[in-house]
Each structure stands twice: as structure tokens, then as C-alpha cells.
Image (cartoon, rainbow, N blue to C red):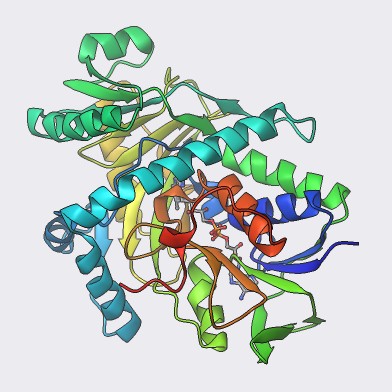
Length: 415
Ligand SMILES: Cc1cc2nc3c(=O)[nH]c(=O)nc-3n(C[C@H](O)[C@H](O)[C@H](O)COP(=O)(O)OP(=O)(O)OC[C@H]3O[C@@H](n4cnc5c(N)ncnc54)[C@H](O)[C@@H]3O)c2cc1C
């Protein structure tokens, strides 16, 4: 029998870690405080995003954030609050949002995205399970020349990175997607992106892991972690005590609460996003981002998902109807033929993106604990980077040669 591993968190990162660890013969237990049927890994837009190679911490974001702070329906909302961790995170974000740091991270983000997309394609062709996966690219749709120029500037940077990017006219977009009339000027098209139906994949993956003997402790919240001689000796929930050779911390936005118990600081803030599902024909066949409104649209398996907003306001799952309306109004502005109904808006759900201040995830070990491997902080790319993170985590735990340079993702990095 291989190593025993406890994975804290059953989102996409925890499940993919369990998948690759199980493949290597480990005895795996996943602990999750929920029933594992909601949250970020279920409600996301399902994009696999090599196109998102520019970090969220980009120059100009601070100014936009301050401008949007006072507008309840803006795509980005940062709630001002007296919280030391939030201040430190905001300061680290500001320090990261420089042109030179963004440039440095472009190829790092692109490479891990491409690697992860390839791993999804391997999973799709494996006999382990079947799931919805399409590679139709992504349209970055714009209404104004100013935003079109900004997007094409990024697109040209993508071409330098070897990605397939084109600047399309409105007519060219209509030819690609004839049944969804759009009120736009044009779109920058990335042919490298793919999309999936996350909630279905999560169910399939849980079923597969179950069938292979991975143990699940659902509705069990990890309350404490005990450390002795730099090693975790106990993972404690309300009802049980778990022991294992190795522990993976993949608790999404909650990760810092747990790492703190080990004296490990992970700068992270929850970034809430919403989704509205529409289960009728919309004519939308290609994933799109409505650039000015920052709304993501995905044709999923049997329905269309409209997702958006980034609300940095602590850990809660409160639904703010103003933000749901903002998504729905944006859809109407870009697709005059699509009206989202009040029932569809009432069924909106939200999830928390675990946002690091520099836009890079934390993947690896902390020097403060020998048998803990951290996988969190993926922000807007957690769905995309699930397989790459899971694979890297299994390589770290099994002392194998790692597939990518882990230095940029170090949980010990300074901001
Ligand atoms: C609206 C929206 C759209 C998005 N669109 C995309 C997209 O198109 N592409 C993309 O790549 N990414 C997207 N994302 C981001 C992506 O969904 C997240 O980055 C990703 O789901 C994070 O996965 P995770 O496993 O780290 O965290 P989570 O999915 O949050 O999972 C963490 C788990 O840990 C559990 N947990 C926490 N604390 C404890 C504890 N103490 N004890 C036990 N269990 C605990 C939680 O219950 C949870 O199930 C989107 C997110 C949102 C909200």
C-alpha cells in the first residue's frame, strides 16, 4: 500500500489531487465541511483558460477597484473593512500590480494552463469516465473601440506567446454563431480555450473516486490540526480524528483559517461570483466574455450559464440581487433577443474564488510543515488548473520529478 493521504477540501483541487494520488496507489480520504454539491467548483463558468494569461493583479485594477467600490452593480466590488489580513492582502495586491511583475507571470500562467488543458484532454480520452468537454475557443466581445483596442493589445501579446488569436468583426462573430445576434463592435477570439459543465464533472469525479475506494468524510468540518516536530499528527473534526502520512490543504477560500493553525500565513481573500443558468435555447454555441460588463457565458450540457462579478467582501454566500440583476442586464445589452426571467434570477447561486494577491496559485510545501502540501489561491482559474494542480501535488507527495517549475507557486513566497 502507498502513502496514506488526507485531503482537506472536496472542490476541484481536492478531487483532482485525490485522483492522481489514487492512481499512484495512495490510500486517500477527502474531508469536506459541506455535502460537496455547491460552491465555486460547481457554479463556475467552466472555462479552460490559456487565454487568461494576464494576472488579475494588473496595472489599472486598483484604480478600477476604487472607482467601482461605490457602485453596487459594478463587476468588481471591494468592501472596505477593518481587517488586518484584508489590508495586508490589498497591499500585496498593489505591490504585485506592476507591469514588470505581470510580464514575468505571463508565461508561468500560460504554461500551467496549457498543461492543465492537456491533462483534461487525457482524462477525457481515458476510460475512467465520460464528460462534456469542447474545444471551441473563447470570444472576448466588446462594444467600444477603446475596449476593443485594449483586448487586441492583450491578444497580440498572446500571439507572441504562441497562442492562436484573431481580431474578428461583428459579422465574423455572427458567422461563427448565427443563432445568437449580438450587439457588439467585434471580438478577440482565442482558439486555445475549451469549456465544460463543472457540476456534472464534479459528480462524475466523486463517483469515480468512490468506486476506486477513496473515502469521503462529508459534512465534517476540520476544526483543528495538531503539529509535532514539524509534522501534522492529527486532523480533527467535530466527530473524528484523522491520521495520515501526508495532508493536502485544498480548502479554497477557507485555507488561511486552517493554515493559521500551523503558523503558516497564506494571503488570500474570497472573491464571490454568481451564476444564472438558463435551460432553454439561447442560440449561444461559443463561450464568450462580455468585456465591458465582465460577464462570462458558457453553452453547457443542456443549458447556458451566465456568470460574473468579483465581490471581495469576506466569506459568506449571501446573494445580492443587485449583482444578479447586473449580470442579467448586461446579457440583455449584448444579446437583445435573450431576456433572463425572474425565476432564473431567483435560482442564482454563488461561489467563492480563493484569490491570492499576485494572481498565482499556491502549490507546494511550506517550510513550516514537512507533511503538508498546499493547493489553493487559484482565483479565476481554479477550474482550469484543477488537473495540473492535482498532478503536481501527487508528484510532490510521492517525491517524483515535478512537471513544472514550482518556484512561482511557492506558498512561502514574499509579497
Ligand atoms: C462565478 C464563478 C465563475 C468562475 N469561472 C471559472 C472559469 O470559467 N474557469 C476557471 O478556471 N475558474 C473559474 N472560477 C474559479 C473556480 O471556480 C475556483 O477557483 C475553484 O473552484 C476553486 O476550487 P477549490 O477546490 O480551490 O475551492 P472550493 O471549490 O471552494 O473547494 C474548497 C472546499 O473546501 C471545503 N472546506 C473549506 N474549509 C473546510 C474545513 N475547515 N473542513 C472541511 N472542508 C472545508 C469547502 O466546503 C469546499 O468544498 C469561477 C468561480 C466563480 C465563483
